[in-house]
Length: 277
Image (cartoon, rainbow, N blue to C red; front, side, top):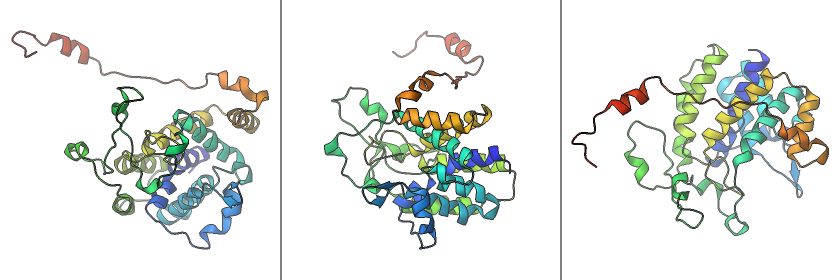
């Protein structure tokens, strides 16, 4: 596994700990031994402890071969303390950029339990800010979409157990690129209908879409061969440092949309005679 594959896997799995944390995954004293290094301190206590759960998951489910992935996931909120600081900062910057679409919650709505907060359906926001908001039931993705039309309680524990059971069935000795795509598919299956963030951010972006975007941007940043100095300045710009604000105006990414040739021709060739309107 080369550095690029490690960065992509770490970006994909950097927040898998949120899934485990919400499902009640327990940390041992050994898991917490790096807490002071990789968790930021806030108001006298450590925050972002989901990174400990991410590191634990990678270590226990992927094994020693992926120890670099474990370290990069552990330190994505404290990349300066990581042995591979430049690689960790690639994941950190991709994570920050991917989080940029989050909408903050009003203060009075920021007190619910994260493990009980469902994903808000974006389509219910089409009526405007004053329209009623509805939530997705938290279920694994399946061919039958019928269950998604009836609300249900958050169900992290059974989803977490099923996810880990599917991961256990994967061969960890395959090519890292293949494993990446296998994990991507399983994460889509199990995290598409759970919120990426739900404490101070409106829960309308799924955990899957956040980690997929993070992995995509981490790949772009790696292939751009950006320096660690550039990464430091970009992270400073995102924190509001005036000296680095001009960097945010750069256009380093290109979003490409594709269509299947012939679909439009087929649609417009369908006869409208006797069509039901």
